[in-house]
Image 1 (cartoon, rainbow, N blue to C red):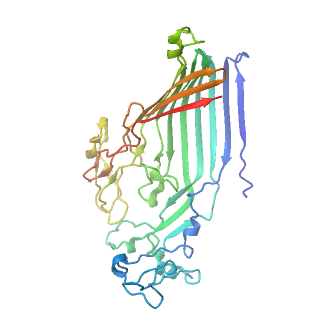
Image 2 (cartoon, rainbow, N blue to C red; image 1 turned 180 degrees about the vertical axis):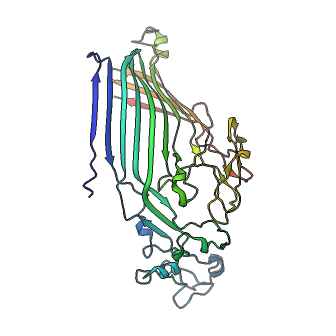
Image 3 (tube, one colour; image 1 turned 90 degrees about the horizontal axis):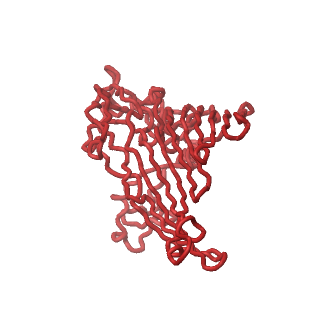
Length: 434
């Protein structure tokens, strides 16, 4: 337990004229939370608990049709035609690693296992949040304008501290000789998880809420925001933004978060069509029973696209990380799936140098979606009601495109090769209420 993890929270609300028409609200707080690296027990993936080995099955174990009948694999029999069984899956034997065999740095380097390591600092991630907004009754509802921000230090960042470094003048081109941690230069798979990431968020939020009156209920919101960090989370990897170019300069990766959305608009509307018995129009006669009792629900979503990082299809640093140099804007005002951004604005840097193009340098295509529902309630007798419902998800079958291929030098660089949403989905239902 960390006794210094104190999380105060302060909030305020002030009625400007004492009539509940205009209210100012604000608050600030600090919260601490454990940040799981992923859904698995990653420390348990280290040797000797977990060992990964490769067996040449093509030459050692034939297809089942070639098994010799009755020839079961045993410790004494590991021929090329024996049949592996559940209690002897690897008759060739398994190279066992244990704490007794990994006694020092040299033995660990010789075994070259995959490593998952955690920082000894083990600092608790936290979030500092602040908001300030004003609410006012307006147009039969409530309008709110607010500023919201947050800062989250000590977030977990996963990286390989033993990446391959650049070739130095007169130095070796061997990747082993260029590992950053030379006493462990045989270890290439190393996931180090340290609380060295942090994020910042600021946003302007506008919301209008109309309570149910005259058959109409509405919630409309818009957010203009920016989220920045040094890299993706340990589990997700940061989406198309990814992580910094090299672990030797993590601060150079400070840029838009992989989930950043500059603009987001969402509206939800429920409307009882004013036709039929008890409604404003056509409330009598046979037609009222045929056309009455309908309700329309709709959810509309507009969002700007997520950021992505431009990379190289083929690196120029002989195994070291390699991004391009940015020599132009890169953005196209009206990009399309065949040419979403200007690939000529990015070129390969000279060999054995890091490119100057930034992380999250461009943004992908925006998304648009409409979900529409039509309902009708038919009253049979007093409290007995049949409700018919028809839903259309992505009602207009609008394609929302994925981020483009951003590997400069590849055949598909600058092109969008897929979508991120489903096609239109229709469903109907009938329920009986009593």
